[in-house]
Image (cartoon, rainbow, N blue to C red):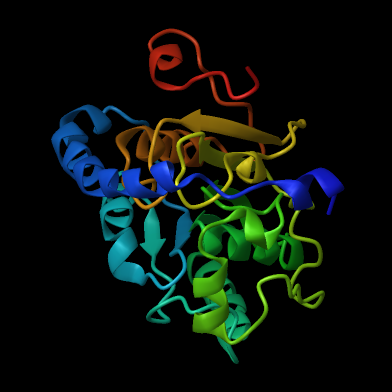
Length: 256
């Protein structure tokens, strides 16, 4: 991890206070469903959605329900609350990716919110033959653990140090997965420093910026549309997110 990444500060108290927007963003998602129905439909491949710290599959139900309506075979992570990499968590996720891949006979796309996105990246590094693509939502893979306002919660929930990386679980967090990868982030994230949630741009990786809270990112209309757009790409034909036309009004230039 670079010195710059280690030096990132967590979001301000003001941005933390503004995380209450998550409730209104859920309302905006429900109100935007008629417009979101214009998002491209999928090809039926399996999609695994991983929740954030101390959250469960209940938190990702709006996103999963929408993706199911777009034609995907969607699964939650099936492990209750995400309390970090406790005993058995990694193996259960690996088993679930294998199960989805074997059941559907197709590679699995991984969508992870916050800590769930860190898991998604590492699973893709371990199982590139079974993973089709990775999409993260406000996941701080490119920063030190204390560039978030949640590191103490992680240590209490998991019983592990926040800066403890397990080389057996995919290696370095900041390394880009060997599959098409999209990092969705917000400069007004009140939990994670946004700079640490951006992916390096390459032929198969990108960042998409939205204006969202951290706690509402998994159901924010702009994030949901972007996830559906990325998942709808044909396998082996990945291209960067198109910000032209009306999208330039919703999705800022992430490299401005």
